[in-house]
Amino acid sequence: MKLQQLRYLVKVAQSDLNVSNAAEALYTSQPGISKQIRQLEDELGVVIFERGGKRLTGITEPGKRVIEIAGRILSEADNIRRIGEEFSEGDSGRLVIATTHTQARYVLPAVVKKFVERHPNVHLSMRQGSPPQIAEWTVEGEADIAIATESLDRYPQLLMLPCYQWGHCVVAPDGHPALHENPLSLFALARWPLITYDAAFTGRSLIDRAFERARLLPNIVLSAIDADVIKTYVNLGLGLGIIARMAYDPTRDTGLKAIDVTDLFGINTTRIGLRRGIYLRGYEYDFIMLFAPHLTRKAIDMAMSGAGENDVYQL
Image 1 (tube, rainbow, N blue to C red):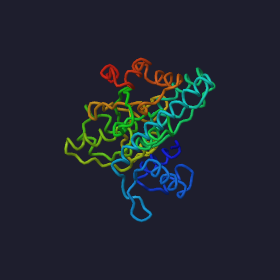
Image 2: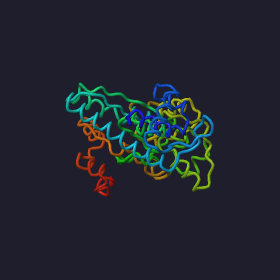
Image 3: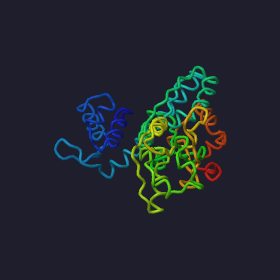
Image 4: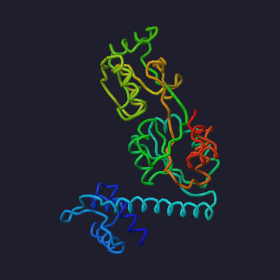
């Protein structure tokens, strides 16, 4: 039995039994994967995958147990590698953060600056994507830390740690009639064309639910993943923008005014996602604590072990 064989098993299962996709993801050949899986099945004396001709059609009951254990073995093997790297390389290495544009543009710069100053020998890489992409990258080990507001709680492989809460604001060109609404209501917003985030991003689900509860159909004329894009089109007069409050800066966003609408759309919670059971290197703890100071090393360890979750999960 080889780790490579276990890696093939897990990747094929993650790829919905598509061996070609698994081979592409692992930079190897489809026949090579099929051969190694057959050899492992012969060694174990059990059939792991059900087959229909040359295609895999399902996973047998013993196969499910083998794949589950294989996943744990691979996780622990990765932890051994990470421990070796930490103690052999010291305060150097690589850290991959997967996050959204909003976090990367408006929240993380100060954190990254402090982190780089403290850990000049750590190569920091940032991958931006949608919340589902961010979660998948982290689950598959392509990223070390996920930071997002939406979707991460749908992945049981990830431990979710709350970091901070925030609300939305409406941005409008200076002099727009909406700025004189006191207070600005959902009914009033529904009268104007709106520009806001794509459905998977930055609290959009709360925006949609608020209009649904009020039985109103908002006139969303444009959606984007980037608050800067939204503000650009608001400046062109195409509609009112609904963006994360952190994305508005009165000194930078000249010509625009903002109205806080947290009371209309509710509170969003940004979270950090970590693979369950992963060994965290010292500089990973430091990055998390810089981003969310209430997440001390003790609190993180307690959450990773499944103890003291009530303490960790309270903001």
